[in-house]
Image (cartoon, rainbow, N blue to C red; front, side, top):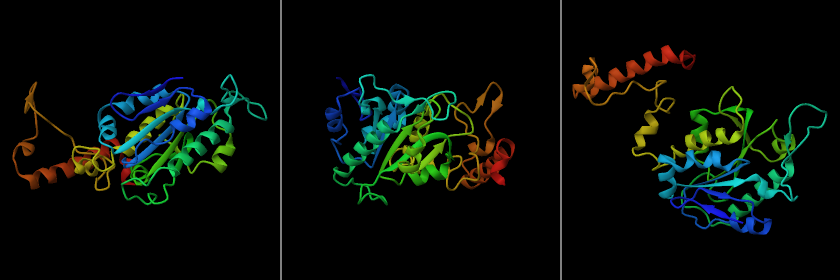
Length: 275
């Protein structure tokens, strides 16, 4: 069966390989990446698109992150590749079965442990430990502080929920952290996984063009809430002029204006951040 690698980076989708071949494919071909992320999903295409463009693409090309996208059905053992079943006790919908999820995570953990230590000194680098995350509306809300914490991990395994969720034994005995990207429900966890990975990878050293960019972001470690308004050329457009202070060259006054505007914008759009 086909093994797909994009021509420009390490984003991989393994297409229903035989189990023996699959174990060979999850072995890492390089150990020069700062972070490794494995995504387990029933819909690889949903993740591949956004994680193969722009900053995510460059981060992979530059050896900052190694992102592998796996089809969870590759870890099934029946000819129909069944990954779900009806819930015990009755109820609507289907529940994701534990067997393929456990098998996939155990294979990926074993592969990372057989890989030589990665270059970047992280808290987990010496032991090459893996943090297992489940994307779920029942999880902790994903916020910038959590993204910063996860960016210090060496290996993430992200499980994308679907249907009515996963068998709870996965959560009890396999998952380290359940994460939700907000108080709403999506059709599947692959969309949420793409958001999670983007939020983490952009914080890795070298991922952005300027290191200060992540610090100055809305919700950044040194931000006062939301980011101040930004302007570019032309200085006047349809009669609307850029604030004079931004054209003054006075960096002290510009910094003061930005602080004031950041506070004003936060009060108007996100007053909850001041509580």
